[in-house]
Length: 336
Image 1 (cartoon, rainbow, N blue to C red):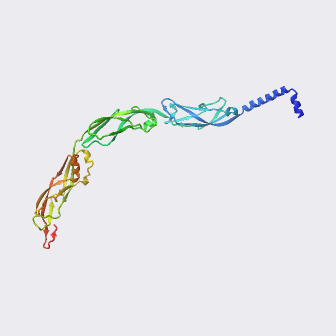
Image 2: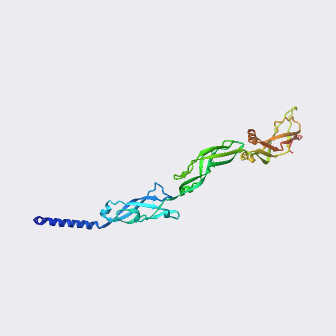
Image 3: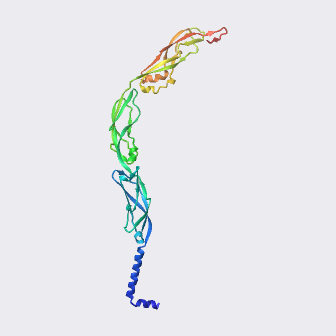
C-alpha cells in the first residue's frame, strides 16, 4: 500500500497523462472493431406517373447492417423504392433491392437483404370507353311493345388501375320502370362499379324509351280436340224417358288466334281444347240433327280482356246426330 502511495506522489502529472493516453488508445482500438446487427426497415414506395400503387400497401424488409457498436447503437435506416415503367417484366413489377435502397450513416455497410427481390402490386393506369346499359323493371302495357332503348351518352370513359378497368364490361343505370304505353325520356344516375379506384367521366345519362302499339299476329293451332258435353237423359212431352245415341261429326278442329306476340308466349298448345255444349239444347226426346257452336274456354278470358283480338274455330260449329238407342227385346241397349 505504501508503495502505491509513493508511486502516485512522485511525478503525478506525467503519470496521469500516460493513463489518459492509454485510455484513449483503448477507446480508438475498440471503436474500430466491426459487428453486425439485424434491422426491420419499413420501405417508402413511390410510383412514377402512369402507375398505380394501392395507398394502404405496406412493405417491411429485413436487413443486416455491419459497423462499429457505437455506429449501430442508435442507427436509423430509411428504405426507399422508386418504381418506374421499365420495372415491369411479363406484366409484373419485380424489383431487386441493394444497398442503394437504404439511406444510413456512411460508415455502416448493408451486408444482407431479405427478401432481395420484391414483387409489388403496381398496376398501369389506363382509360377506356364502356357501354351504358339501362337497368329495367316491369314491362310495357298490354297491346304495346318496347321498340328501343337509347342512352345519351351511350358510353362513358372509365379510368383506374389496369386490373379494375379491364374487369368492367359496362356501366348500369339506376332502375327504369317500363310500365308505360307511350314514348318517354328520363334522366338516370349511373351505378358505380363495386371497385374502389374506378373514376367515371359522367354521373348520369338520358334514356330515351321507344314504345309503340303491337302489330297483331295470326297463329294456327291444328288438331285441337273437341269435348262434348252430353246430357244423360232428356224428358219432354212424353213421360217415358228414352235412351238416345249422339253421333258427333268431328273430334278435332283447327283454332286460329289473332293477338300480340306476347300473348302466344303464354299459350300452351297441349292445354287447348274446344267445347260443344249439348246440355243447353232443348231435346224433347226427338231424333234429329243438331248444329252446335264451338268455343274455347282456355282463351275466353284473354279474349274478353282485349288481349286476344280474334278467335277463329274451323269449323265454327259441329253437327250432332241424335237417334234412339238400339234396344233389344229384353230391354237392354245394344252398343254399336
